Length: 154
Image 1: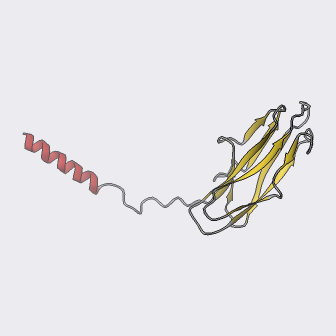
Image 2: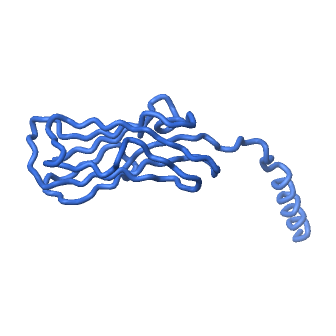
């Protein structure tokens, strides 16, 4: 009886091994996309009492490569914020360059203490526009989530 149980266990293990998935059944996940987020969200709020430098990362999701990827973004400032009064832009231009082995690049904004008018648009939107490799902008899918980050000063 004990011998039969052992034989059944060995046969079960062999059956499991021979029926497992083959190596070529699942294609390699190699989608290449670029997205921007803070704590997995496309929105973030900054206090009007904050005196700090905010760092907002743009992420490259792609397999390892020797290619350099350049990303262009657009900045849209609401009518309630004024540069030099509410914030100071720290990046020199509207492009980011991902060198080989780099998968996140910062966009930095210095926030200046200044009250805001709640009846105005107190947002800065960072919108990813394009890249020189044709990678998807935002998360894969028709909604293109995380292609834009909205920062609200409140």
